[in-house]
Image: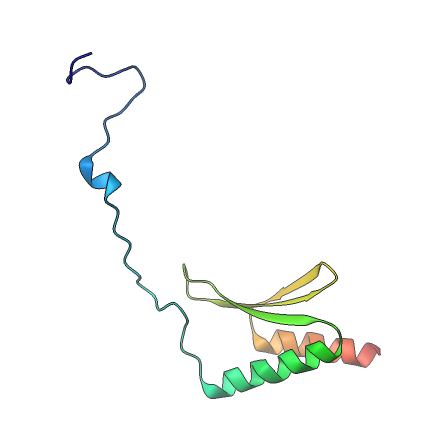
Length: 95
């Protein structure tokens, strides 16, 4: 085959496709106020007393923050701390 010929089904790849440059548009960790961080830490401690683990997830593709409460393979996802605290109150009330 010569340079101008190509096999069936094969497309030429432009030279720029292999030199992908990733530019971060959003910060790696969104800046949160100390009030939110303190509330998150307090909720983590209270969940630990019930045998559960609270985790905060920063989604970089859209900048949202999610909260996950886990115990024995069971997971609950929340988008706000208010939902997390309401779930904790329901757990504490059931005991």
